[in-house]
Length: 350
Image 1 (cartoon, rainbow, N blue to C red):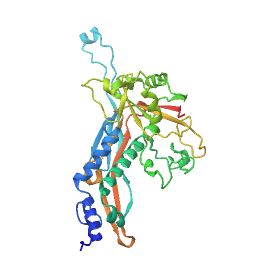
Image 2: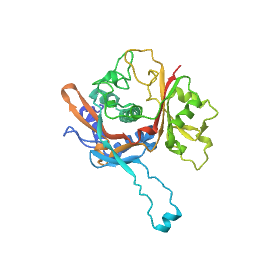
Image 3: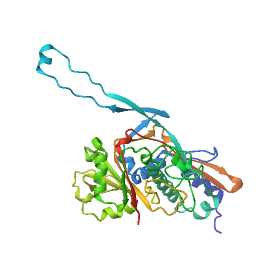
């Protein structure tokens, strides 16, 4: 006679595999190695994690200094030297930018029957899906976030299931209300493409960055997928296989144009107006944008407490024959020099 299967025990074993312990407390966490696995996937799939500098944070809010003015040099003549006249003093002008850790959290109910009848591969599927979604959300957060809660005035526009699924509301895409991302803060003169993208538009954007474009190694061009495909057909794009063995190649890097690293992302909306904002009332907008930025201007804040960096708890709901996974991440983001980011708007998607 075959041995009967205790589905309750099987469910507990699966939850133990997720949490590294029994679930009697109702809120145990993933073991460190599992959390690090998910974070590893996120860092691999979100190129901005490797591109932008990061700040470890042992408290929720930190002030990060930045230069707001440079020193000045003056003429120093022979008579000044002979008379012992000191050079005119000049000090660095400094200010600061605030980094505040904020939380992104998901609430994922898992039916016990899924565990009972489909346990094979369930854990790897769950982990990969959580990591992939988190990587995408981070990219969108760093690019598209806007703290404006008058949703029609938000750069993403108000959420509309028919016309603007990338918009925001109190409950949809609301994680984008956490910070002001690169699209929101950019103050360098924008380049109005108003049609098909051409390399002349990129040259104009480089010019608009001024001193921040002095070293092309410090620049990154972030483009939507449809523009990525177009750029791959340009002879001016130096692909990564031609960099040479000594070159540092970041995950997601397509190549370089004029020495500037190019990255493609699916997080940039492709239904924007010509000015680069979302519009819930249109539904016919077919423009997108690209972002040229100095990579040392954005800064990402990571909590030093591992449990706040990323964790998954779960909560039993026996009356619903399920348990709930609760992935949670704390992250901070700020831009030190808004003038070091230039938007290229009005790029046709068709």
